[in-house]
View (cartoon, rainbow, N blue to C red):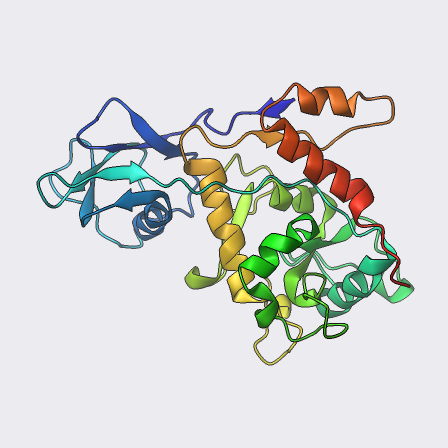
Length: 295
């Protein structure tokens, strides 16, 4: 079963020449400013010209300020006659909720725990860390292990300085990880929120802010520039862009079910839903593909 991201959107945006055909929209939370919205549109919009953004019925174009964005319909207006406005062909990846459960993952998990010691999204500290008790806390990959080939294609291995050897891509480095509470990890993997390293590491929620994350900032323990283990900004930026694509383009990508208790027909549920092949591949990798011969 999947959930639509377009339900309850309060912001919709259009090519001004086609005012009845939305290009996408946004579930508006308080952290989204006019500046942030314009930046998000730069991720989403393909145009062969400069353009301006107008709240329908307003008398002036939207300016990149830190004022909160208002709900409403926004028209994207070409600055030249005949200019074309369209939504990008880029799509977000399909990813499953992945937990570190193989021998290959153990160093990653240990390094992330040692560096962070808390959920770096909520700030909740693991008071039992001295007993090596981490129930409720999980080391989350920013870029998923299932997409290692894509990781290499984007030249991300060159960003990673902490590796296990010359052939290691670095996708399992703590520089690609964050410690989160389990429920927050699920939200992160489903692109329910993103962290913008170009906006003070501010967190933007793209759906209902059930856990009070919107407007918070990533904890400094994970991004200390003096610590080589710190998370790489480029990976956070990639994840944020993926969240924008997943939530704002068109009707949005489906939100997939993560909870498959024993006895559930997981295969049947996945195959009956959207992007079945991609979802099945990601789900199988999360359960089987991380099994490694690495001691």
